[in-house]
Amino acid sequence: PPPQQQQQQQQHRQQAACSRGDGGCSSGSTTFDHKFSGYSVWLEPCPLSAPSLKTIMSQLASECGGPNRGVHEFVPHCTLLYNVDLRRTSSSLQCRAATDNGNRRRSDERDGENRERTSADAEEEEAEIGRNLLDRCMAEYNRMVLMSGGTSSKGRKVDSQKHQSSTTTPQDGHAIKSTRPIQMDATSYYYFPYPKAADDGRGFGCVISMLLVDTSPRLQSLHDAACAVFPPDERHAEAGGTFAPHLALVYAPECCGDWLQKWTDDANAAASASTAAAEDGGGSSNGRIADDLRASLIGKMRAGCISLWRTEGSIDQWYRVASLELPKQSQKVDEEYRFQILQPSSDAIGICQSIRDRVFIKEQSIPVHVERDGCDDIATHVLCWSREEHGMDDVPIATGRIIVEGAEAKLGRIAVLPQYRKIGLGSRIVRELEGIAASAGATRMSLTPHHYLEGFYKRLGFARVEGDSIAIVNDGCHLIKMEKAVHVVAMTVLAGAKDNCEENK
Image (tube, rainbow, N blue to C red):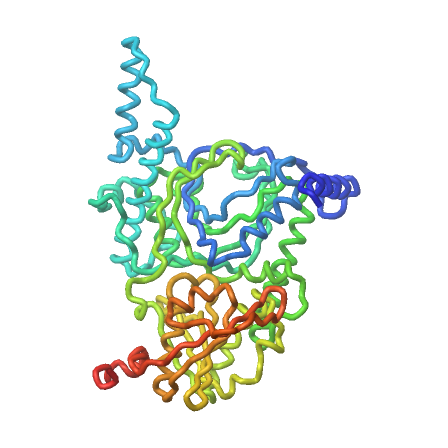
């Protein structure tokens, strides 16, 4: 239906549900009218690491009434600090210019001179202050990680003045890049009613569905760094609160409480069922798409940027003041990831299949019988692990396989979990497979990727087979055939061949 008709239908559904007292509506406010205040420091996930997150948030906002009920969409984020008064940073180097300009402006007005800056000037000054503070925040985070190996005492109070004096300010205006991407590990969904009377009258007067995030040492260190650089916020530092990371999905009127609580419970059930299916070696088949989307959010997502937002007024009035992009990958990939070659008889091939289930069956809706083609027992696999810290088990994150028959080698089942994409792991998997083909004596490799990946494989030296036509598996799976000659030098990419590099060349 046209957008206007869709909106009318949604309003009718919501009004009918409220009048019946079922369908998810309960007693309480029928609109969300809370006015937020101050500035907030956010950690925003990379959209590619959680592709369904924004979709789910949009659906929730619509189901809970949309803008007509004060339910607005917002950028996905984990709040590091909330309701910061930046005027308290006037003693710092970053904000002194703003204070001095304000004093000069008042002096000019007393002298009868009208030299007020334009709104654009004020916004640019605000953005410059924000960028400087974020730079200092990341420099302090880097210092903490280097000094403590990434550990941080959870929930401790931070002496802002002490840390501000010891923080190294970047000389070139940019924070020193940390060597490891920051991950947010979503563990479960959580329903949170937050009436206005909560927290001594500071409640928002709404109900919230959120993703709870594990308080990892690096995430805690980032929060501590923000506390060290920014003034105390409403929840932490002087307020004495502990850091409980989460990603809010929707702020809804209290009348939607019953429905939103059931949705949250169902989301947890879908995530649990998905985890159980993966552990059993099975896959998603004809389950509801919504369940698959909700289940896909449980797990790690890479942080894309740290940002400063002006969270004043209603949600639709929020705006980003400044942001600082975070590193996508370590400068030394081999220090952060390890690549394992699995022979056809390996018991670990089931781990590769579990990665493929998440990518091909659940994310791309490839039929189970197509993905499980019975060839794993004759294929050599490459399995990529993310090296975890502080004694935690490494995590399998990417895989690929190759079947060598004489001079021909067929690559396939190359899959990278969403939160680890766009950092070069796919290319590395292909190079590892090419090394296996070379060591087995193959002279030509072929693969059948999705048609939209043609450019990616071209950059790796593959070419479309002349006269090839697109093979359609289903509505979202159109395959092409590509080939590449195998070069002996490719053997040097094998992890086990490093000691013999010169001989192989």
